[in-house]
Length: 170
Image (cartoon, rainbow, N blue to C red; front, side, top):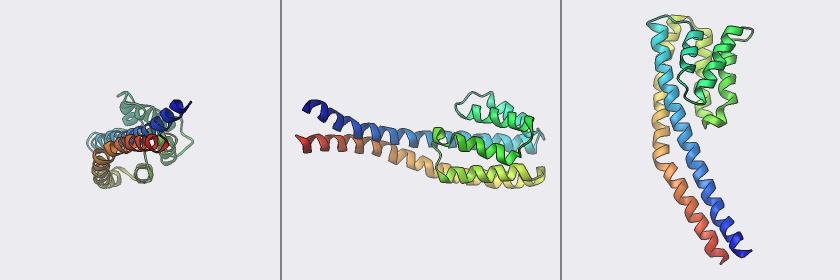
């Protein structure tokens, strides 16, 4: 019985550390993909004048989970009408924010994107999208730094905490 208890005490902090590390990694990778998508949207809106529904449909075909599902839902929401783009865009990301690993900073960026895309003409979108891409890149740089430093730290801390608990209870 004591061995089982010690095993659980050792494994639990390790699992928590690895979970936090994975969450940090997910946030970074999904933000990186979102940044790339913003650049694609910017090009398609400004150079080719492609409608938003078509842009999101093309993005949904890239099959990068869970973003492809979000983009497909946005595309369907645009096609169905009845709701504003701002609402459809933000609500789809809000539903998947845990899966994406997004924190408040990322959701603020999503909110800004939804407000811009849903309320501006092409000229306004072009101007503000460039600014949002810069904001996204700054946030991405910050998350990359976090990913490089904190992801491994969470794992190491989990292992050390688990070892500490086993030693204390021996």
